[in-house]
Length: 175
Image: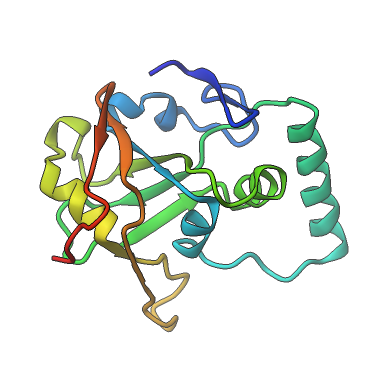
């Protein structure tokens, strides 16, 4: 996959965009991309803390930079391949996704990287894994005391795996 592209008027640069991480630039080897609505991505991540003055100015600055054409790094979810049900174990990109949602709304599915943990790679991903991830996932928890929150799918219907686009059924059964 190209490391720079534009989608829905948002510029992405997976090497030098705001919040870019090197692993996402290597997504064709380290995982896959799913196209999901911003609200779905955000539901899988811990909520942002309430706005504080300093935090609020950071969010506003980010929104202005993206509107002016500054590129962003693709947000990601960190997952394990064979959990049942799948869990989100880490993420990056809540601020960017809030800003992008503010610009383009929530009706457009945007690219989200799924980075695999424990040595799994894109070549290990099978259709049943993609169906499981799309069917629903347990949202990331900040601590063991946090409520376990299952986000029901379909979470996405389309993506890119090892440079090839894939499409899943809109009626994916829950495993």
